[in-house]
Length: 358
Image 1 (cartoon, helix red, strand yellow):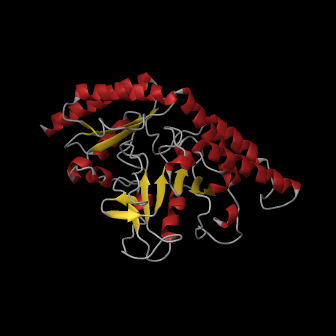
Image 2 (cartoon, one colour):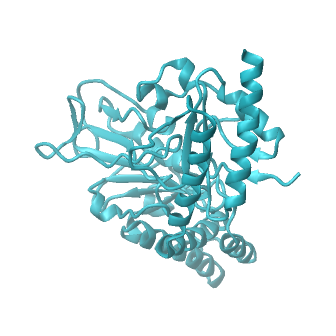
Image 3 (tube, rainbow, N blue to C red):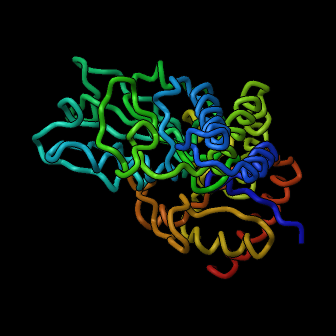
């Protein structure tokens, strides 16, 4: 059976450029904190990747802090001054929601509260631009924050983004979402913002995250983000969007009751969230997996975790309807045959479900 991978928002296939960079880095023996030639060679790998990330996301190299992923980078929210409020947009990833704190007093770095939000939602693909400041503060409902953290994990390499013009104070991203290796990510900290270190010890990463850097992962991430930006410049995602439209048109023909979540709103090009009331997303994922298709019932957070989507419920869907959603996320290597085959097989599974439910 020829398998079709349609779960790029969970993790993208490793790019050839990343693999080559990682293999080359394996042969470099030095510790980047050492001052001898071998150490300087290893340090050069880290700094090359730092420059690649900075160029891709529109920030200064000194603002890039390498981490184990966006989740660790987001843990910076938990290190804000005691008593500070952390406000989180309803559609944000659990990595941000884990740090919600509504104390009503206190302050974050240099005073004030922090708003954390995702720029592009991994479950629905919906793009949520940062709000305009109100009286110099970031609004969320009736609350106001002095600081802004953007989760750009699903956005980088898929839509134009520049940290320098976003107005944000912090941003987080993971390498494996754009074809880098798993286990490496970035925290971006705006110049002149002081934060408590993510981990203490040897003072690596400009004192913001101690521990010997993951040289191999960092090298792969730098090469991957470079390649991802070339894809964006070449219009690769315009082609992916056309494939998504073919897929969604086929689904609409097959099922009038299926809801295309976020259909009439701005989305990243590759993501379809299909909500079919009465047909559990988990059941659909298993049926399509057996048929050779890798899709998802939501964001990939922990193995085997399937539950009604908090994001969809925040959008107004009930728990039962939210639990019936699946996510199909395409990638640059996806082909028209992949999406037409998906529609054919999914339609067949839907018909079988209807007969069993009749």
